[in-house]
Length: 168
Image (cartoon, rainbow, N blue to C red; front, side, top):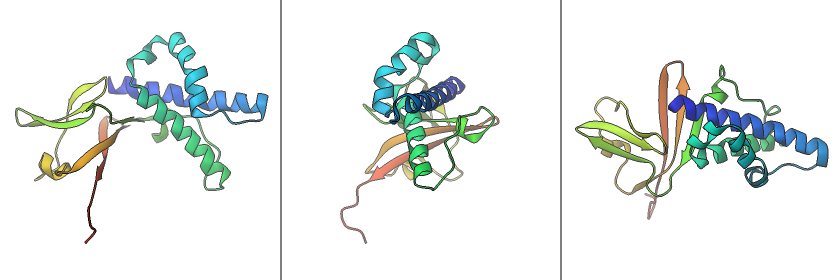
């Protein structure tokens, strides 16, 4: 199921990149993420049924990654955006955003799990000597989760936010 999510993110990334290039050749304007999501993504989901099994934030983040790559290219900070490849790191991850408690860390029968949208609870390994309270201290909120695959190892990076009243 994780590989499916990663593959779906790669499909949308590559489709947005190609549609953006085509759109620019026709109109001399950039195709925005919101335009793509409104005009092209529904048709792509109809064409490829398996894309309906993935969280909408995965697709939004895949498109934003392409958009950020273009912005860095035009600022001279990076090369021209590339298509995501199964064999390269840029095509082996997906990011989803937190909404309505869809991402959470939880202990079930003293085993740590992370809940991800459309995937459910996934068991993970805590670093030695750490607890869930060490990973997510009281007062921090989860903002997003990125799942990355390298060979047969999966990593979950969770972006969190803590509000600090007065810096010390």
